[in-house]
Length: 225
Image (cartoon, rainbow, N blue to C red):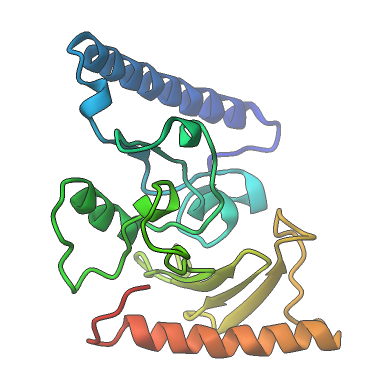
């Protein structure tokens, strides 16, 4: 365990974690300053992100692996020379995924993305587009993570994630969960077994959509998610 009963180990782990984050921040600053020194910053596409979030004892967990918000939400900062000044420094809460990174980088370089790539070029979210309206963007996504070692260590997990609700499925245990992200953003109350008609309706609709997306992403079809 990374956390003990009196909190001492938690303090050590968290301080080390933030020391590492501070070092990464300093390294990024050095790179940006060198680009400025070479007068290349305004001609350089920069995409800052990471592969996963991290549990800091939320849900009694450490590390990553599972579909809770602390694990699957990651930073995404884009510096694109094509971006208008009024867009710089603004935020966007649309769903973007790691599969969007390759098409976005290829698009910035003027290279068409291969059809077999399932992600999307994210630049329409921040660049002025000729087409009106903008291309429809995703409002949900399918998440999956495989079992590691054994199911009593790190079991497989899957989910359908939306802005308002999240459906989770643990295939190794045949266990389901449902969370209301609007009223319970910390995902502390599992409402899967709620008998409220409106919750039952949402649950059944999400289970159906979850099955559709899972079948789609595991098929050999060329799809854009």
